[in-house]
Length: 375
Image 1 (cartoon, rainbow, N blue to C red):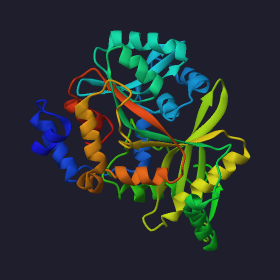
Image 2 (image 1 turned 120 degrees about the vertical axis):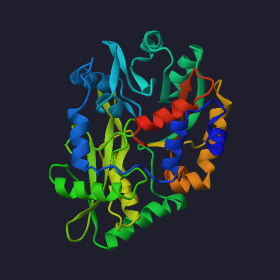
Image 3 (image 1 turned 90 degrees about the horizontal axis):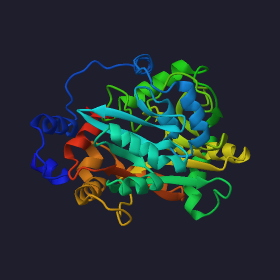
Image 4 (image 1 turned 90 degrees about the vertical axis):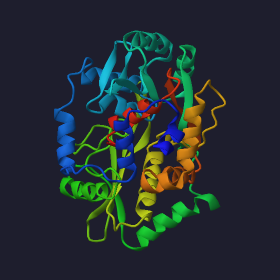
């Protein structure tokens, strides 16, 4: 209990939440029936909320303003709620009485301040999770404290090259799998549905949170083909899929401007070189099509400086501690491993932010963990 208070502040924390957090750290979740990938995929879709903004309108807005990593997830992830109108919208979820906005508003920059003010008039004290710099500036002007929560890595595909000493590891991985008869092919879920589900099942059982799909900050994997989403498969000499990486699309003014790595899974016995080889192949395909950029997604809690905005010192200390904590990286989430892997691609690191008006976010952050499916 004292360790939890040291990490996330001195605010009085309900004993029930402390107990739940400690169970999560010890990997001793209460016994719950394991649910298959198909179950979670179907449940996410069928139990989605009746939305105030129809799916077609959200996709139309996505193609106009969806130029950041979470945009596709914000517009399409089941079980999110929406606030907005013809100008655009915000996606949010709630847990334990707390409201969390996911990513930036999908709207024009000129409409962002007013849309945020209208949202805040309806929701008294929300938190904004994984927003970019422009949204962070508006929120600071509206009285929010803004903390860095990590970096998103962007590869400029127009100039990106695999040449040089620092990219030797990528070339080695691609050569390693090719020498052993593996190939990488783009395809559809529907063409290999049974194999994809089996891989996902095996992968999930190796995770700390294994009984269900993680959601909200991560887009749960659907078992359907989605328009504009790209899928690359790592195939053995015997023709079996052993790993895959999916890429969500990014848009601006009706045009495709890039992709973001969204779903990566492999069998336990699959080589660690598989993901790197898939990434190399996907980059080459995107470059051949003239795609401007590839985003690698958030490296949580990486590169936290907090020099740009008015911030919460408690969150700053907690973020730094958790990123470098050996026990947390080993038992809960490998922050450092994610950061080191993405940094090796030598892309541009872009700061991402968390914003809240609360002076102490301890219970709020535990509620966010629950919303994401951690417990």
